[in-house]
Image 1 (cartoon, rainbow, N blue to C red):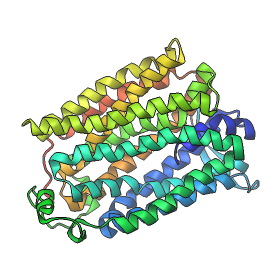
Image 2 (image 1 turned 45 degrees about the vertical axis):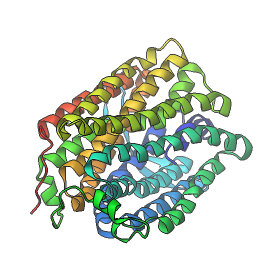
Image 3 (image 1 turned 180 degrees about the vertical axis):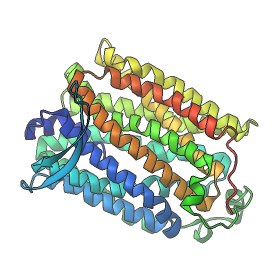
Image 4 (image 1 turned 90 degrees about the horizontal axis):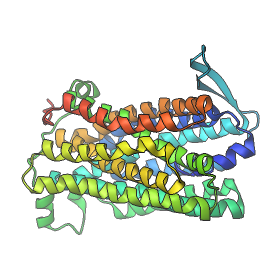
Length: 423
């Protein structure tokens, strides 16, 4: 649902005359703004209501918002205030402007989408914390996180086909409606560990093989006072925007730099390759740290070694914009996307390594807010840089440097991944 607008960017830009790159970046900004706001509450909401009902509510809301994109052009008099990042020499800075017509409609739909999607990762990480012992959580996180890449592979096959047969509106409606079916299936199939009818006593004992978490009342003010919370938040702040760069801007990059068209035959194979490779990275990154743990490494050494490996594999993306042809660029971006997903699997697992289960959803919410804030300003920065330079060179250089910087910050804030004791 996030990626549909990125694939349709060339079509939407042509249809609605969005000649200024900052119009599209402002629409993306609206999603990130709502994502940041939603994460403030999503983690606490999941800790309170539980992932079974909470996840269904979240997916239902974002599916409705995804479908609403198909009606974005039906309110021509709509006006929405939005930030621009000026890139003109002598007048750089933020400016408040109004999006109108279809651009305003897309901004409203993206805002609602961001609110709904904010619940996804707090619910997912909390579910993993409930169902897996610590030694398996990174791999489990890598597997569920790989699902986002399956969606990203299907989208470039489905969306151009729908676009060609029924138009851009149905690309949003058709993909968004799938979430309603998923919500019903989730409510039917998911049960908490202590109430699942098919869980054997031996399985339950294995799941609960870690020392019992203390019964605590989780307060945000308390969590914000711990360096471990900030370690996770800084990691999200610096690296989440890079993944969103791939989702929202890579189709445009391939179109502008190599003339790849928004069709199943042209745009489909490159994006499928990128996200298929990313799937291997997601599972591989989780497997690596889990394997090191089983070999006797400490949580600190295993997680950070896996994250360092991923951070180093991202660096070649700095050269993507200077690739001699599209397949070299696709290979470089594929490696970076895989490394990001491996990084992400381990970064998320840090929360359940360092915090008791009742606090995991809230910590993920705090980190998600930080990541969305980074994404907000990254969207504006990308739009401004493209408007000013017409090139992705500096954008990819920034993307390639973020992971080593983030890992250094995490190590300074949590040098041993110390377990937080909440009173």
